[in-house]
Image 1 (tube, chains in turn orange, cyan, red):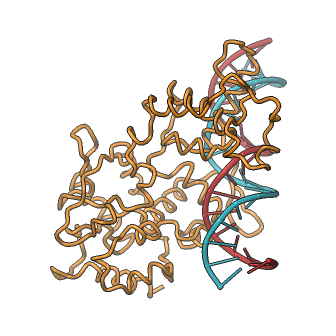
Image 2: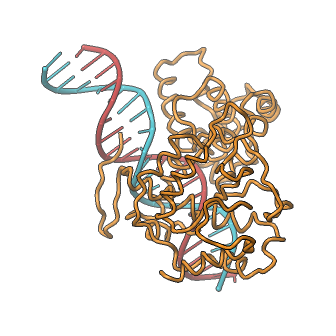
Image 3: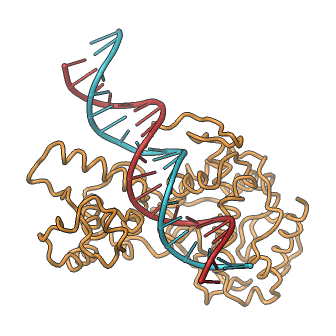
Length: 334
DNA sequence: AACGTTGTCAACCGCTCCAAG
DNA sequence: TCTTGGAGCGGTTGACAACGT
C-alpha cells in the first residue's frame, strides 16, 4: 500500500513512514508548531525533506482527521462540491471537516472509475463534473480541466443555490457540526483574542472528543529523546517574548505561529477538560504519564494555563512571560 | 494453490502562488 | 519591478490487498 522506504542522494529517507518517525514529527509539531517546514525535520530529528513532513502531518498525523470510509452524507456532499468547485480538492476538503484533500482526491478517482465502469445511467455521480462557478477558476484552471467548458452540464442552472442550500441543510455543515476551532484547533489557541491568558482567566471548555483520544495520548509513550530544539525562534516569536505586556495582549498570533497547541485547561489537574460527559476525559493520571514523557523529553512544561500543571520547581506568582524566557534560555543551549 | 487483475491510498513530483527582501 | 524561497496544490506513481480466474 505504501512505498518502500529508501534513502535519496541527500541521505533523506523516502517512502513509508515508520512509527518512530511519526512520533517524532507529531511530538515536535504539537510542541513547537510548523514554523518552517524546510527547517523542521532536522530539529524534529526526522531524516525527511520538509515537504514530506508537511504532507505526512496534513494527511495522516494531524489530529482530528477522520479515518475510514466516507459516509453517505459525505459522499453526497462531495459530489455536490465537486460540481461546484471541480478538482479543487483543497476547497472541497475545507468543506468536509476531517477529510484531507488527498483522501478526497483518491476517493473521487476511485469513485469515478467505479462509475465509469458500471456505466450506470442512474448513478448520482456525474462523471463529467465540471466547475459550474467559473469565478473560482482562473483561465489556467479552465484549461486544465479535463472537460471542456462546452461540456458543462446544464442540469443545474443555479448550482450556487443548490450547493449552498445543501451546505445549509446538510448535517455536515462545518459551522454547525464542527466548531470553528475544529479546523484551526491545532494552529490557533482556542481562546478569543480578547481573552488574554492571565492568572485570573479561566479557559473556555471545549469538546475535544474527536480530537483527543486515548490512542492519541498513547502515541506519546514511545517518543524518542533524539529531538532537538530550535536554535532560534521565529522572529515574530522573539518579538513577542520581548514584549513585557505579553499577558495583556492577544495571544493568537503568537501561538498560531509557534506553539500551535496551547493545551489549555480549566481544571488544575486535567490536561483538557471536555465539555460533555460522553467525551473522553484525559485524567490527571494520564497527565502524570504525559509529564513523565514530556518531562524528560522536552525538559519543560507544556501546559500553559494559569495552573502550570506539574511545572518544574518554580516560584508561585512567576509572571507568565517568565516561562517563555525560560524557553529562550533552553533554546540558547543548542 | 498459483497467477493475473483491479482497487486502494500513502507518498512523491512538479508546478504555481505569494510574500518578503 | 524583479528575484528568491517556502508553502500549497493537484496529478501521478508504487506497492500492497483483495478479488477473480
